[in-house]
Length: 125
Picture: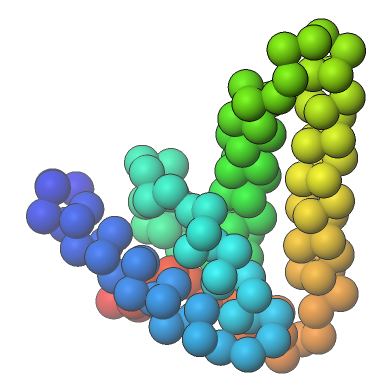
């Protein structure tokens, strides 16, 4: 894939995320989460090309983003080692709960919601 093709796929994925973000309910929530956390890097583009459903990409991206954000929060945490440990544990718990809710929402989605979530992020060719 050349640079132009890669740029076109990334632009198409961003446009699709914006379109899906306006949707009501679970589909919109997942797309908004994806838009907030999904870095369109080489891994993501590879998943797009393979046709991986966006809910799976978003769940993985959310986990990666939560990990990075938790690390960032730890870096901002208090200097005292005991306070820092409590802060880190609280941040980890918060992100684990958020990710668990996203996974639960995916697992408990109705067939229609699952079908909507399975729309890939790039246009079909």
